[in-house]
Amino acid sequence: MLQPVMHILKQKNIILASGSPRRKELIENIGLKVGLCPSLFEENLDPKSFNTFSAFVEETALQKVLEVENRLIFEGKKPDVVIGADTMVTLGREMFGKPTSEQEAFDMLTNLSGRGHTVYTGVVVKAADEVVKFTETTDVFFGNMDEQQIRGYIATGEPMDKAGGYGIQGIGGTFVERVEGDYFTVVGLPLYRLCKVLYDMFKGSE
Image (tube, rainbow, N blue to C red; front, side, top):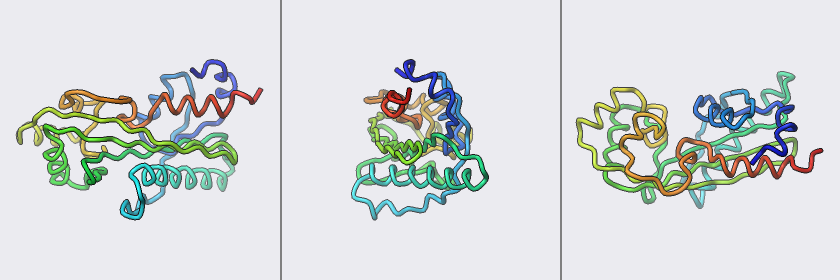
């Protein structure tokens, strides 16, 4: 999709406001070079103060982008494009972020076992004064897991830095019965929508 503007994008200093090697790999797989700059934003927004899950993840992603951009400008390394993303797992009206303890991971995974849940990934792309925000959602259905399987998975350490306590692209994918929607939304970066935004941003930049 990006081929017509790839020569433009390859000349840009593109920064991912994240420490996620998964998100970096997704972008590099489509032929773009990107630098990782983990955001120092505290991610302390209150979900209850937002009307929708989408508004919450988009605002979190925006704050990540603004913090990284301002810091890099202060350091004299102004980026051309900053991309930020925030992923959240929801079950009904409940929202699951990254577990803060093994017990919390166990509780999350127990709740998700044998049920369907919705993953929201909010993305913000900022190039100069142009800011584009969007959210993608994907439904994920887990098979039934017993306590031994859940505790065995937690012992691998994988759940501890993942929203909802699992990584679909890793061992956690073995619990997933099916996915309805964009798989990459669950990984943490909806590729189709991201590429569409980048294409629309730069197609007239010749």
